[in-house]
Image (cartoon, rainbow, N blue to C red; front, side, top):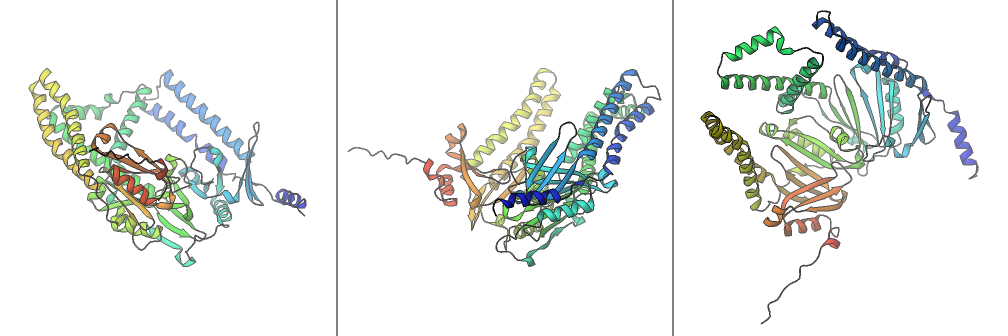
Length: 516
């Protein structure tokens, strides 16, 4: 009977038909030509229909590149096939260079669905199947790009249907954990990324126009703005510019929040998975296996913290490398802190979020270290202005004095805030650590998920009798640190959290007795 099993398995696999991608994928690939054609028409419109030879060559090369990419996409549609046969999923593609890959269904840990705007126009979705290994290698995942929504939903259900529920949980626990509340939109502008996005957009646009031999400073409205700025004091022009950039940044952040979190839902599904649905232009469906959850991270950026807001990230294995983990681990958008704490507790199946635990304080000397950093940062920012004042004009000395008066209280306040944020403790099965002032992060990590300790000491830490203790794990960022803790306190904490793990690497300090 044992010799007949492979034959029967092979016969069943042969009987399973191969499925192909949707024919609409050809239309998606053809739609990629819209970008270079639009750029070409825009260049002609701006130049009055008299684009020089260099612009035409550049745009022509882009057009040819997109034609090649489109041809490759059409060939991919003609040659790609997939099927679920026996206990594995198979994918084959290629014409000149054939590729056939297979993944055991027992290794499937996540099935994510993504649809960009062009895909959504034609009703298509991209299915990404992951094995749960923390690696960026493409060999650890399969991507089926260009199936219909119905095919994608059916494929996801078939791949996840063999899961078993997490221990200690019933079917009654399944259901909605959180969904979008548009009152959370008030938290969208409370981020510096909006301002960064505005500056990046203007810089990119200027560079593109410059490459096309178009000087944006020659535009009429730009000259008008330049003339207006020339008629007002310098400080007023700088203030107005800053306010405009901040206002545009707020608009940019709000638009990004709306696009990224539109239709947000966090659900616990049967079979032991969490599913995060979100996105307006690009829809995303991220699957996180519950038994691979090792904790949560509560993140409070400075402005968000002032507004009593926070967001929750999952500390879980199987979410890919560091870049992928930062995107796929997001469980919530910025939301009221109480709501974030409730989500953290429900995700961990706890009555109360472990991140609310009272923390053990760090030595007072950590405050002195942060004050020294604040003073150093202030000096580094003020010193160039003072040097210009001594070299060029007394006006720069006044600017240096005003800058110091503004920066010194602000940096000292942040130093005190960073010291107050430091803390760590143990609560039941969790190790909790907190640090940060620009972005305060409180992590609740399962103690059984700690696989090692990383002890580091800088020169200044050794002089102060401090160390940084890193709990290494196979989940999330892979190392969560207890920063600037006393040597004895840190080593005792490591032994208390995971008994016996650090002990083999410690040496007992010899006791020197005075001879009488």
